[in-house]
Length: 159
Image 1 (cartoon, rainbow, N blue to C red):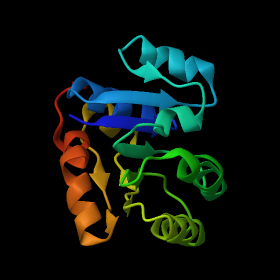
Image 2: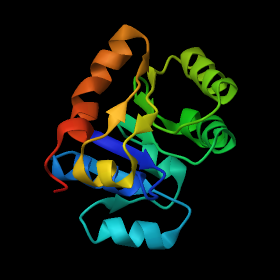
Image 3: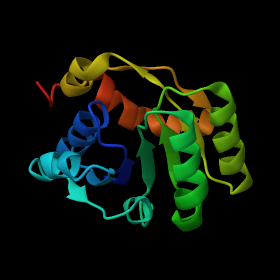
């Protein structure tokens, strides 16, 4: 099983992180809102005190953030500085193409595999583990991400 960092534990991110955790992965999550962290801590997800602490030592990082500027800030100011070499980055935020390209290009320059995986299915889909992802990136990166995305697509864990 993987150690997964998860940044962005809101309405969508919280159930996604919990489903990954319930599938046997060690999930360490960060969010700006303590109440979001408290809710998932009660469900067994480990809590980090910063974005850097969530990604430190992770094999995979998921992000689920509200906008392009937040995605850019998290990756450029925190993630790329501390992630171990080879950490697979999976951004599930629905953001503008310019921010997506900026982060993807930066990941490539740091030699991190990255998958852009915006999601459809809403909070009920996130809770039920029945989301739909539109995944893009290098074929090897997407292939590496698929086993984790499949947990969030066809899971009965949250039901």
